[in-house]
Image (cartoon, rainbow, N blue to C red; front, side, top):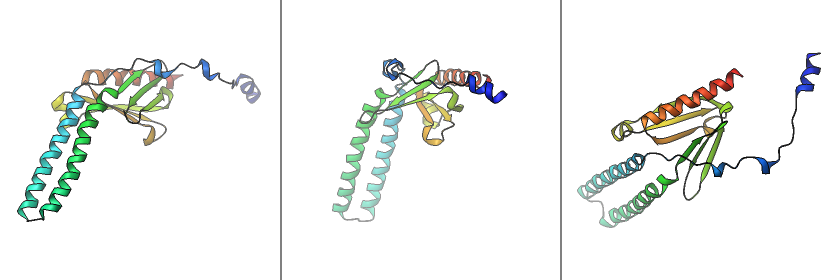
Length: 178
């Protein structure tokens, strides 16, 4: 008898895609400018390592043509790295909606991830050494879909990261109670 009642309660109506809300209309919040500084600091550290390696190469008398070729390749990637950090920062955005979290990043290839609250397993914040120095934090959202569907929102102010963590955790716990 219970299965007959459950069959009567079950519905699976078709959804009109045109009536769904457009995620592109959501005003995304941006991350802290400190995240761009973190990217530049990483690149500067890379330059220092490159200079040390170049000095070691001279010390061990590696042929100049080899050193210059390697340096040229590294400088090309370094220039691209600076360009990437500069252009990538404004493209980070996130928003909490009634039923999901939206996270967007990328400028060559834009990637938008939308995670419904009922797929979220847990939420955490993290801060590395550079994050602590620059006063930023990362919000990590872990989903039931595995590592490929998890997201990390970088460059948040620590208070903001904690507020978002609490808001998402509250939404998840409300979904789990229903």
